[in-house]
Amino acid sequence: MKKTFFLFFMVVTAAIFGQNQKNEAITKVISTGTEIKLEALDGKAYIYDAKKTFSSFIDEDFKNWGLNCPGRASTETLFDVSEVVADGTFIQIFTDISGDLDKIVMTQAQIIRF
Image (cartoon, rainbow, N blue to C red):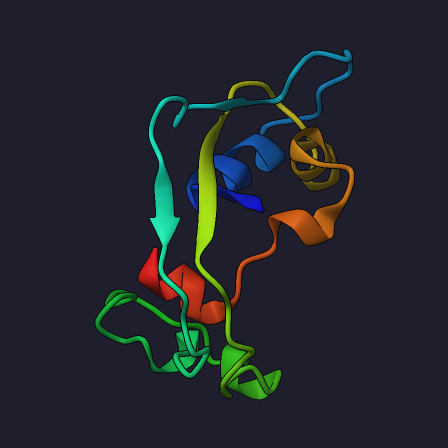
């Protein structure tokens, strides 16, 4: 099963600067020809404690929303990396990759490791 990872600033930038009114592609895979693989992870790492990875800022809401706890373990996972190439809302951007949003979800441990 392949997953897709977006660079967060690209997603935010596209969402802030408008909507895609046409039915054109909003994202483009930029990792074609490259296998990006994360090993199986135990799920014990979580973003709130990843101060080394996210050294500039971690929002306290990760703790306030109860996200400062281990998640589920994950198997070895293949990823595609995409960039946002057109304006769009969050829903347009993420559904451009897959209509099944469960296919593009990463665990906290996977985000940290990536």
